[in-house]
Image (tube, rainbow, N blue to C red):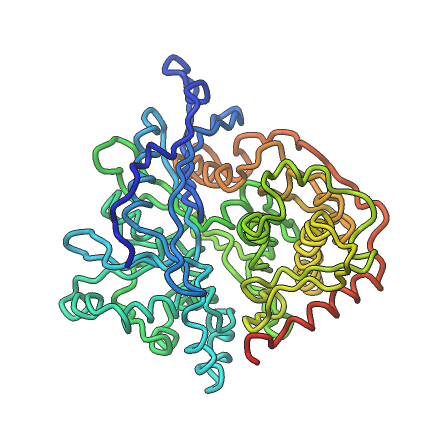
Length: 504
C-alpha cells in the first residue's frame, strides 16, 4: 500500500472568497459535497436557484500494478472535511460519492486498513471470468440486474477479504467495516454506518427488485452480509456532522446526482455525463427495465419518501481519461489546443479511434477489448488522431444510448455535462452521432447541483416539483446532418476488431 504521507489538502484547493456566501446574505442555502474520482468539490445552492462553487480539492491517484487504481481513503476524508468546514451557515449538507469505489476500515479506530479500490480498477477480472464460466452471470443479472464485471463493487469487496490479512482479523472480531466509499464518509462524519439505495444498486450485492442486500449474491462474492451497512433512502437523516451543527440529509451516487442536476424526472429524460468515463442515464419509472442481452443495466435513480424511481444506465469506460492519456503521450499539451479541431469528420476520412482503453462497457461488457486507432497513414497528424479520439468517445456513447433507446423511448434532446462538453467540435459531432439535440447547461457541475437539490429536499424545503429553478442552458446544439448508416457501421466494425485482444 502506498505511504499515507501526503501534501496537505489546502495546497491543492482552489477557492475564490467571492464565490462564498456573504455572511450578511440571509437567503437560505444548502451545501453539496461532491466526492469524485479526481477531486472533492463543495457547492452552495440558494432557494432562488443561485448555484455557486465553494472549493475544489484534488487528490492523488495510485496505479500500483497494471489495471489497478487506488485512492487513499484518509486523504479523501480530509478533503471532504475541508469542504464541510466551508459549509457553515447552511441549512443542510448532502454528499455524493464516486460510485463503485470501496473502502475497508477499522470500526473502533475509524482508520482505513488499505487503499480504496476505485471503480476503474480491473484486478478482479480473472476471478469474475472464472465465475462466468461457472454460470454465475445469470444470478447477478437476475438478482442485481448487473453483469459480472470488475467495474461493480462486489468483487472488490471480496478481494479485500481474500488479500488483506487485517480485514480477515477484524471480520472475525466484528470490527470490520467493508463498504462503498459513501458509508466510510458517513460513518466518520456522522457516525452513520449506512449506504443509500442508489449506491447499493451499483454493487452487484443488492437485489434490484427488493432494494435489500441479497444473501445469494453475498455468498457468491464471499462478502458476509452482516458486514455490509444498512441500505437507506437517498434522502435520509444521517445526523449532525461531528463538530458542527450541520445536518447530513442526503447521500447519493454521483451519476444519479447528475441525473437530478440535469432536471431529469420523467420517464425518457436522458442525461450524459462526460467525466473519466461517459455515463448515459435515463429515467425509466417505477419499476426496473431489464434486458441483459442488450447490455442495458437497471439501476435506482433515487428513493424519496418511500417511493423508488428507477433508471437505465449505459456506461462507456473511457472518455476524459482517454484525453488525459493522449496528453500523457504528448499529442497535445493544453486542452485549449483542442478548441481548434474541426473540419470534415475523421471517421468520414477513414480514420477511427475506439476508446476501449479499459475495455468496452455498454452494450458489450467486454474487458478483453483494447484501445485502437485504425486508418492511419504517413499523412496522419496528431490533430487527426485527436479528432478521431473525440469522435470515438461520441460514437461509443451513441452505441450505449442506442441500446437504451431500444427499450425505453428517449426524448429527442439530451442534456450533457462534463469537461468534454466544453469542446465545440465534440458537442457538434455528438449531436450528429446521436441524431439528437444536445443541451449544454450553464454550469459544468451538474453532479454537485443535483446533490444540492437532494439537500434541499432533505432540509424540508419543498418537493420535487418545487425545487429551486434551473438556469437557462449555455448552449443548444442541433444535430444537423446525422451520421450515415455507413459511418456507424464502419465504427461498429472497428469496435469488433478491438475485442478479444487481451484474451489472445
